[in-house]
Length: 150
Image (cartoon, rainbow, N blue to C red; front, side, top):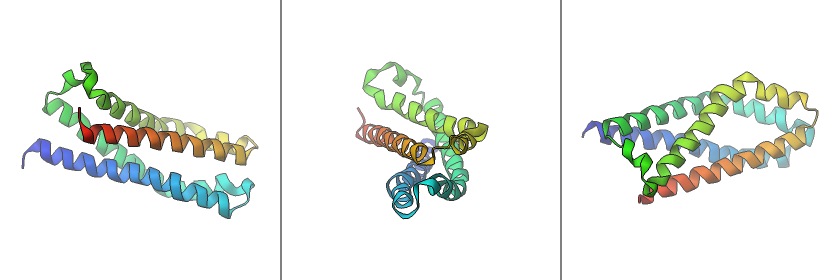
């Protein structure tokens, strides 16, 4: 097995665990919280679960980014970013950048505190739920494009 094959396997595993976690949070956890808790407790309940998942998500996002960058560099695939047939490479980078910014910048710099202070936990939770749905959809489209290739 060569380095690219190993990196691809690591990359796919990292994306599986990262986006699989996002899918679970979006499609199972958030609706369960909405149905099982009073609206004024939705955010607090979500944060209790999310704090356990955030560290794992950060790890998988870092591994996906590092393995993806390594494959691009090692496989001399930089030119793919100039070819529109490889639109999914741009999409991968965009999805990864959004998640990395959320996990490493926006959340640590006070997103959760801002949401708590807003005084509208139900509205903020619904907004967050829609954001998760949109990001999950973008990730799914990206993965379909990457697997299908050109």
